[in-house]
Image (tube, helix red, strand yellow):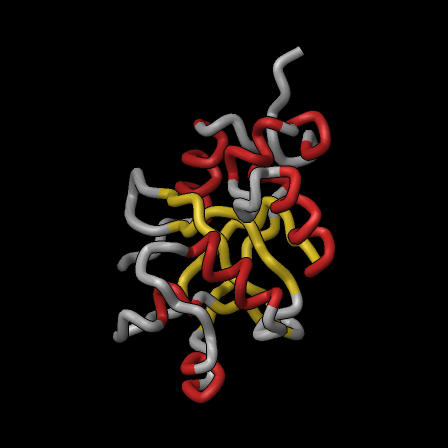
Length: 145
Protein backbone atom coordinates (compact mmCIF):
# COMPACT_ATOMS: atom_id res chain seq x y z
CA UNK A 1 0.00 0.00 0.00
CA UNK A 2 1.48 3.33 -1.01
CA UNK A 3 0.70 6.56 0.80
CA UNK A 4 -1.21 9.41 -0.75
CA UNK A 5 0.57 12.72 -0.40
CA UNK A 6 -1.11 15.03 2.08
CA UNK A 7 -2.09 17.32 -0.80
CA UNK A 8 -3.67 14.44 -2.76
CA UNK A 9 -5.50 13.22 0.36
CA UNK A 10 -6.92 16.73 0.91
CA UNK A 11 -8.11 16.84 -2.70
CA UNK A 12 -9.81 13.44 -2.53
CA UNK A 13 -11.46 14.13 0.81
CA UNK A 14 -12.74 17.50 -0.46
CA UNK A 15 -14.25 15.67 -3.46
CA UNK A 16 -16.29 13.65 -0.93
CA UNK A 17 -17.77 16.89 0.49
CA UNK A 18 -15.51 16.79 3.52
CA UNK A 19 -13.40 19.57 5.02
CA UNK A 20 -9.88 18.13 5.13
CA UNK A 21 -8.45 21.40 6.44
CA UNK A 22 -10.38 20.69 9.68
CA UNK A 23 -9.45 17.01 9.87
CA UNK A 24 -6.53 15.66 11.84
CA UNK A 25 -4.14 13.34 10.03
CA UNK A 26 -2.38 10.70 12.10
CA UNK A 27 -0.15 7.71 11.49
CA UNK A 28 -1.62 4.29 12.25
CA UNK A 29 1.05 1.98 13.66
CA UNK A 30 1.30 -1.72 14.41
CA UNK A 31 0.20 -2.75 17.88
CA UNK A 32 1.97 -5.18 20.17
CA UNK A 33 1.45 -8.77 18.95
CA UNK A 34 0.15 -9.93 22.34
CA UNK A 35 -2.53 -7.23 22.37
CA UNK A 36 -3.37 -7.92 18.71
CA UNK A 37 -4.00 -11.59 19.53
CA UNK A 38 -6.63 -10.55 22.11
CA UNK A 39 -8.44 -8.19 19.69
CA UNK A 40 -11.50 -8.83 17.55
CA UNK A 41 -10.17 -9.04 13.99
CA UNK A 42 -12.91 -10.33 11.66
CA UNK A 43 -11.65 -9.88 8.09
CA UNK A 44 -12.81 -6.71 6.29
CA UNK A 45 -15.01 -5.61 9.24
CA UNK A 46 -13.19 -2.54 10.56
CA UNK A 47 -16.32 -0.89 12.02
CA UNK A 48 -17.41 -4.01 13.92
CA UNK A 49 -13.87 -4.86 15.01
CA UNK A 50 -13.09 -1.37 16.27
CA UNK A 51 -16.43 -1.19 18.07
CA UNK A 52 -15.88 -4.52 19.83
CA UNK A 53 -12.28 -3.67 20.67
CA UNK A 54 -13.34 -0.43 22.38
CA UNK A 55 -16.17 -2.15 24.26
CA UNK A 56 -13.76 -4.82 25.51
CA UNK A 57 -11.16 -2.16 26.46
CA UNK A 58 -8.52 -3.01 23.83
CA UNK A 59 -8.76 0.65 22.82
CA UNK A 60 -9.85 3.88 24.51
CA UNK A 61 -11.60 5.41 21.51
CA UNK A 62 -13.49 4.30 18.42
CA UNK A 63 -12.16 6.40 15.54
CA UNK A 64 -13.98 7.07 12.27
CA UNK A 65 -12.28 8.41 9.19
CA UNK A 66 -10.44 7.48 6.02
CA UNK A 67 -7.38 5.41 5.18
CA UNK A 68 -5.31 7.50 2.77
CA UNK A 69 -3.87 4.99 0.35
CA UNK A 70 -3.20 4.88 -3.36
CA UNK A 71 -4.05 7.77 -5.67
CA UNK A 72 -7.82 7.90 -6.13
CA UNK A 73 -8.38 5.69 -3.11
CA UNK A 74 -9.38 7.08 0.27
CA UNK A 75 -11.32 4.38 2.09
CA UNK A 76 -13.80 4.89 4.93
CA UNK A 77 -12.56 2.83 7.82
CA UNK A 78 -12.66 2.57 11.62
CA UNK A 79 -9.61 2.17 13.87
CA UNK A 80 -8.94 2.41 17.59
CA UNK A 81 -6.99 4.81 19.71
CA UNK A 82 -5.11 3.53 22.74
CA UNK A 83 -3.35 6.17 24.78
CA UNK A 84 -1.86 8.58 22.23
CA UNK A 85 -1.47 5.97 19.47
CA UNK A 86 -3.72 4.74 16.69
CA UNK A 87 -4.03 1.09 15.67
CA UNK A 88 -5.80 -0.99 13.05
CA UNK A 89 -6.19 -4.62 14.16
CA UNK A 90 -8.36 -5.36 11.09
CA UNK A 91 -5.51 -4.67 8.66
CA UNK A 92 -2.65 -5.69 10.92
CA UNK A 93 -3.93 -9.25 11.38
CA UNK A 94 -3.56 -9.80 7.61
CA UNK A 95 0.22 -9.60 8.05
CA UNK A 96 2.93 -7.44 6.46
CA UNK A 97 1.47 -4.34 8.13
CA UNK A 98 3.00 -0.99 7.19
CA UNK A 99 2.14 2.24 9.07
CA UNK A 100 -0.19 4.48 7.06
CA UNK A 101 -1.81 7.93 7.07
CA UNK A 102 -5.36 8.22 8.38
CA UNK A 103 -7.73 11.22 8.25
CA UNK A 104 -9.91 11.47 11.37
CA UNK A 105 -13.55 12.56 11.14
CA UNK A 106 -14.35 11.94 14.81
CA UNK A 107 -13.52 9.84 17.86
CA UNK A 108 -16.01 8.30 20.30
CA UNK A 109 -15.49 7.18 23.89
CA UNK A 110 -16.98 3.79 24.77
CA UNK A 111 -20.31 5.04 26.14
CA UNK A 112 -20.82 7.41 23.21
CA UNK A 113 -20.14 4.72 20.61
CA UNK A 114 -22.52 2.36 22.42
CA UNK A 115 -25.24 5.02 22.53
CA UNK A 116 -24.84 5.75 18.82
CA UNK A 117 -24.87 2.03 17.98
CA UNK A 118 -28.12 1.63 19.92
CA UNK A 119 -29.72 4.43 17.88
CA UNK A 120 -28.31 2.85 14.69
CA UNK A 121 -30.08 -0.54 15.01
CA UNK A 122 -27.12 -1.95 16.97
CA UNK A 123 -24.64 -1.26 14.18
CA UNK A 124 -21.51 0.68 15.10
CA UNK A 125 -21.46 4.20 13.65
CA UNK A 126 -19.87 4.50 10.23
CA UNK A 127 -19.32 7.36 7.80
CA UNK A 128 -22.91 7.10 6.49
CA UNK A 129 -24.13 7.46 10.09
CA UNK A 130 -22.15 10.72 10.38
CA UNK A 131 -23.40 11.99 7.02
CA UNK A 132 -27.01 11.37 8.11
CA UNK A 133 -26.26 13.63 11.08
CA UNK A 134 -24.06 16.06 9.13
CA UNK A 135 -25.37 19.14 10.96
CA UNK A 136 -23.69 17.79 14.11
CA UNK A 137 -20.40 17.26 12.26
CA UNK A 138 -20.34 20.36 10.08
CA UNK A 139 -16.78 21.08 11.18
CA UNK A 140 -15.65 18.16 8.96
CA UNK A 141 -18.63 17.52 6.62
CA UNK A 142 -19.86 20.10 4.12
CA UNK A 143 -23.57 20.63 4.83
CA UNK A 144 -25.85 21.73 1.99
CA UNK A 145 -27.58 24.98 2.89
